[in-house]
Amino acid sequence: MKIFFWLLIAANVIFFAVMQSGVLDDGKVSPALQPLNAEKITLMVGVPAQSSVANAQPVSAPVAAPALAFASAPVSAPVAGLAASCYEWGEFSGPELDQATKALGKFSLGEKLSLREIDRVIGFWVYIAPLKDKAAVTQKVVQLKARGVTDYFVVQESGEWFNAISLGLFKSRESAQNFLQGLHNKGVNSAKIGERAGKSRATIFVIKGVDAQMSAKLIALQKNFAASELKSVSCH
Image (cartoon, rainbow, N blue to C red):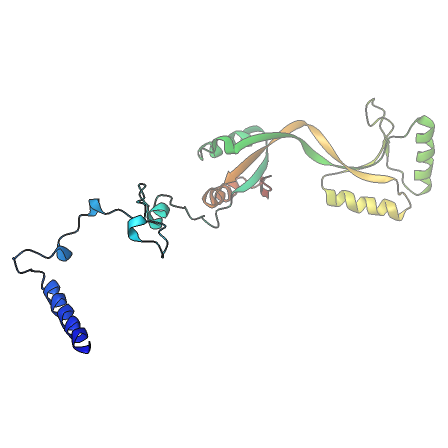
């Protein structure tokens, strides 16, 4: 029995050596080494380990490699540091408005540029809000004189300021604030500061959604208009 076993092993070794040589006794190429025909190969999917190959069903749909699926959908990386900026530039009127308009026209801003008109502030005034009637005005004037305030003017023109009492006109808010503090020191606590808007209107340029390069151009342009102010504003 042992001799038969060793003879069987020897026969297998000889057969394996012949297969590796690739040539059979009749000069033909071994079927094990013949070229493979890719079109005749059927991919077997989902065959359980315990099932025989003979019982496996061929899959007709081709299976795409996962790497190809990603290659077909490139993703663009976000560019950091390119947040848009928004500005207001003003105030302009007369010849200066024409010059600023022409200068901005060279930048081709399109829909990023718009205009906003405002009443030009020509100064500030310290005043007492309109009183309900002439008797109330007279009583307030007596109080002012009693506190040492002799420079005042009662508004007699019809409108929202009728019966208001003007106590002083000023070119800057700071000057008006200093005068108001002096009145408070005298006990005149009903006085307040207000803006005096002129009849002329001024234009402010509104510039939205520009990049860093355009922002630098606007900053440089503003230097040619010393009386103007270019300020950064929210884009919302």
